[in-house]
Length: 118
Image (cartoon, rainbow, N blue to C red; front, side, top):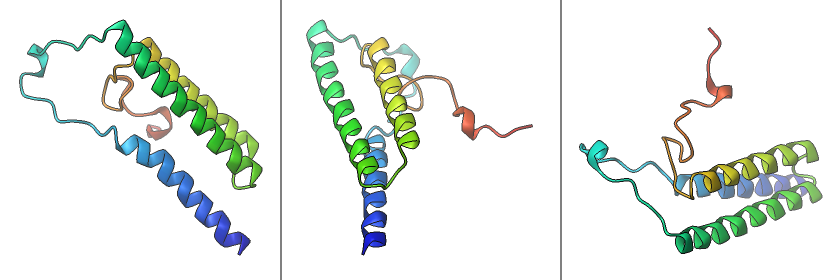
């Protein structure tokens, strides 16, 4: 039973993390994307988005802490996950809460851990 609960918790964690990211899937840009104007948000819009993103960040932190409490993931892994969530929030904040680039955050390209060693 304990093993089943652990597997179920891991599945829920995966769905919650990857489900959120898949909702921000890349939208196909029109052919004349270079000619379109960049969206500018008002201060009120940025404040509203900041409030929502901050709430999501806090809920993700609470969720990860529960997985640590239940013994599903080690504290070290949880700390790394939380740090990544906080970095993502900071990046959004720096970009005025507008997603940029292929992965919704930057034009960095593939993540460092995905690059093959040549």
